[in-house]
Length: 305
Image (cartoon, rainbow, N blue to C red):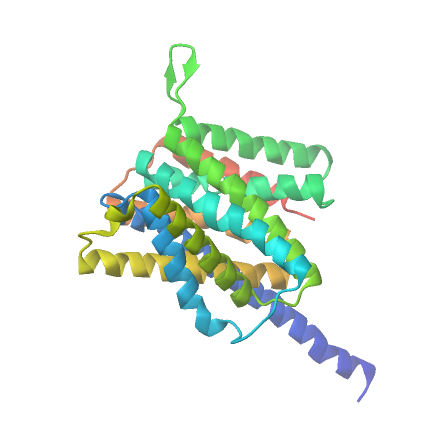
């Protein structure tokens, strides 16, 4: 076999790996985009802390069949998993669900792109991936302006900006998930841990911690009186919006890297806004539309290599 003939299959494999990576992240975007509308239903009856505990326990359990039956984490891997769990499976989901109680699903969908911006900024500061010159600075500025518009909806009270507390909580959750993303990417550079295993450990560990916090906070009563129909919604939300979305997202990071993954993941608000409008009847303001355009444009620019 000649050299070109040998190279062709390898090139085809790399191309297929890239396509699968992009497809994985696109699926993750659609699944995570559905969270903002679907989570509104159980949040009307269940405390956010208790709900986040149940969601992550169910998400982790649904991922067990996809992870290896037995495994052993090395000390360095364990340290990263502790950080990933603390930021991405404890702090972030609690803030997200508390924020969703205080804001609209469409606003939360737009603000989800804060995760992309924060991931790029943290990657730039600590992992050597920096915006390209003035164009990069302009791109980041566009995203910041878009996030500001989405957070305030351009509503002002006298001389004070009327920030929505729920929106700020959503942004904070996206910051913690950005930390999680960078640690997850770093872990994949020196460990052969599979995306399914990483997602399962993170979800189960986070769920157990949140169950403990729920018990200490005396909020076990939140689980009482939940109807069978509501449990089905919670299970679907957990398995798809968190479990499957996380699995596809990590698979994408491993295949195409952080920057390209976050570029594709910036489509999340499109799915979120459409689902919120269809399922909850939420209207989209002109400022939300402009904010979405600014954020996506900025992210597409800043994510270019």
